[in-house]
Length: 351
Image (cartoon, rainbow, N blue to C red; front, side, top):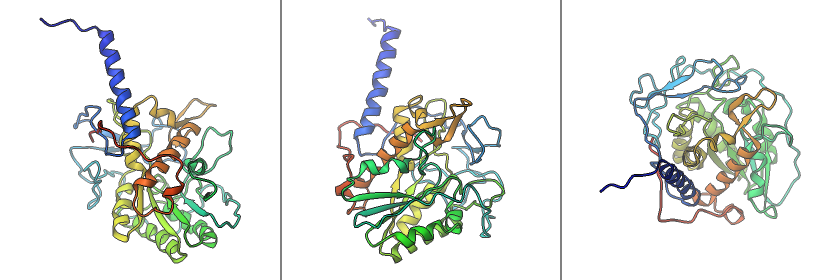
């Protein structure tokens, strides 16, 4: 005889399962997985960077990524994690010019520098990493990163600035400023993606399979010339997920291009892209959405930029990748966030 199951009991059991899955992700170093069912025929929508957009509601002709069909995708670039080619359906993906980008964003933002015998982590990136005013509703994970390292041995110098791509950061000579300060044994963390996909007139854009890799090679080579250690950071996702709560890669082919180049030239890759997909799917919305900013004046949700809460969370996730990433051995003893212990339970998200 079948016993009736209370709807309330089902709800409580489902909530407990999701909570346990999130906890397992927090404490497990293995790849994550199937928590939600995904309809493979349902197109996943991501949005190309629009510097004036405040959320997915902004009409800007989103890129549509079809899991079952990649017609018109970037040839030769397949994301090893999702096993998909990133779809790009707005213009020829290989016509990005190497001519200079137009000026974008404020020209200031060079952080002060004090020579130090400590290991210094220099950050080259965009607005999702940069340091904002303490009372701003936007923060970047770079302004929290130092609290996850022992300050007696490690200092973080954040050169990330809003609107910059891997290309325009170099052209504005921001990399030159870092190179004038960096010393042997220091680290250069490089993360770019959202502005490298910018479809506007600023000419910041790069192609993941060609020009993006070309600029990343410059960062790596120049850092090594100084005796410093380049590190690629595969960019976290924008706040994009499907009806089942499955967060998706929404920064196109840039993370996979970075993984490929890292293997090719021996640069460590901190895979914040993979980590953000896994972790946000494990905790699920609405918790995951708290990581992204909401404009307090308008109430508009910003699916690209980070809230203070989310910036701190991302800094912690990144620090916890350090002990799990080969090539960062001199940083490992100074990480304050513990590495994840192995557990008997694993969850894996289905892409």
